[in-house]
Length: 512
Image (cartoon, rainbow, N blue to C red; front, top):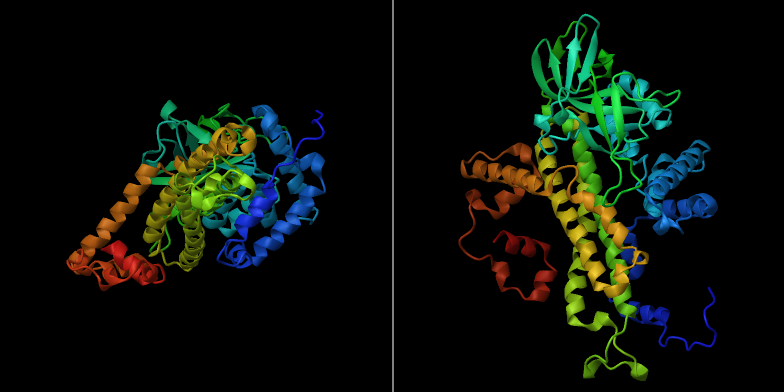
């Protein structure tokens, strides 16, 4: 394509307009960047970007919007395989592969291997089981997924119908899909990639049910990748988005696995069928992978919304329409940036503010998660309930705000937002599952509310739950005897400026 010569350049240029907007900032951009992206991440980003830029024939995303689903999956597999080769060659670490996934913005078929299969083995497998399964998983000699959701059961984990029955005669477990409702469904990395699955199934020993537990089930031959005997597995086909990922289905016809394939860090089934647990173990620890993934969603949603708001705010800063108000006339008779209009600010500025709140929240929650995991490792399961409730609430809030925010940003970009090259349309489809997976958002909000109501009831009864940690402390501070204060707090007399500088006053107002 040849662009005609002699066209009059845009004045002012988009680069000059953006620089003029940035010069108005009342804070240090460098300091804000350090708050959002810490020094270690900046170093990792610089290294990863250099490695990716050195191999454009593999990592180029130039044609991504022209690709069909099969092409997207093949391209994602090609990039994923090369990243693994770079890791084995010592040029990238496993953490840097995750950074590369973020930079490339590809939800590829190896994603659930890293995000769910490996963390489950790290958290719930014994040392011997980690030697059998985790070690080859970290080396990508086996590829895994996390098979929990069934076609008949999603949020209702207790209602899962896949069974894992101990067979004393052979000292094995028989993993079985008893009906079509129990067919594993929507499982990421399962459609064409995974060789193994952590299957969540109802544990049955000597006729007694012990609830859902995780068992490792080989699915495909490590020699030729063909499905193993008793395994029916396949891909679910095109979706609204997320099409580089091979979401799949799984039916198991009385598949036998060794007894030691049941992950036994928090439950033990001995030869002969004796079942035991470490003292004080909360059975809900089996759902630890879901809590971990929700923690990652909270972090990812802050990055997701940041990408959308960055695109929309920059666009609104350089897009010019109409002459604007008399007190905001532009030099040279130029039209006004649409960012100057209140109706645009009304849509974008709250999203920007929420984005900064998300960054701070995700960092605080990541620290809370790490602290709680340390307590679990020491045998203290008290923080688990509060961690679960907090993860549910934050996953619900961050994903709702982020997904709705992307859509708002698309609209704010007008006709240009309709183009795939805005980066917002396919992005919306790829991120939309966050409001659905790892727990329906409405169900999750109910779980958080139920936990809070129990804590309030305990306060009213004069027996606060010490295990609730920070939640009980917060409720005790702002709900005396579990009831709303009758009088307005003194902070209500503060000015808006004073209120903005006083976090404790903000909490008091929210509580009131």
